[in-house]
Length: 158
Length: 158
Image (cartoon, rainbow over all chains, first blue to last red; front, side, top):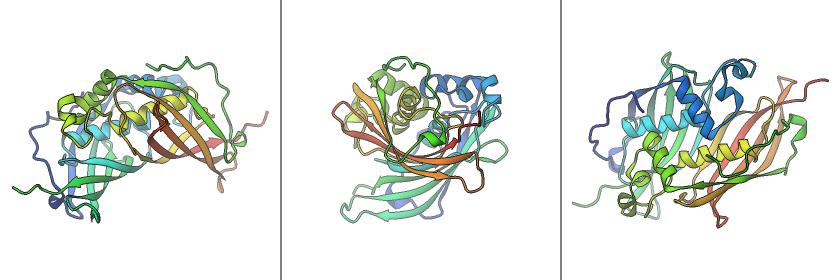
């Protein structure tokens, strides 16, 4: 489904590998009208995500992807090549917003930046990484911001 | 895709129709292993969302749905019968967390509660509704919390 290159074997990152200000960039993904409608039909069947005509007379002024579709594609781009997979990287929570709609034909990519590194007080083997992921279209306009908390393990002893 | 009854024609709600403490309940949706794997293959291809064996040795201890899958299903349940559609109901942002994984075979439903009602200062025709949506499994365990901001229009003059 993705339009970026197939993921090559990526080395997992551990807690020690992250630092504040660290940046990651992904490949890209084209949001076709077909993909927008298929996701909406399954998960967000509102007229402005499904039908051109209905969308034109809505607040969106034209067909727009479900915000949850943009979020799902953002995850795909991060898994493939944005924020690298770490051993035991689990999302403990996130704040998401959609400052502008994703439109048919938009080419999306993500840029992530590490904001905070927080060692666990109770568990010596892990910590939290707070990251900001921006999803951008082909005009470098932000279509989603996602501030997420990742639980990341420290490198096991050799 | 949904296991709840087909949506009947629902009356849109306007800003005036919401009140603090108002509650909405949805139908239900079964998260089969097949659905979990299909979503993960497209949007979150990490081993613990795709493969039983890999999942058993992960932090999840068994196959678990992508959090973004749980979020997408939550949207579906809300559109179908949880938090009612309003004229121009747009998500302006949300905080999402997954306190426990969604497992194959889980039957999900959502319960939403209105937390705050905020008239717009600058635009007389609309306001914001802050809602908490909890996604529950068949044991009434919370698998997702979602605090969302909805932009809702006032009822147009007749």
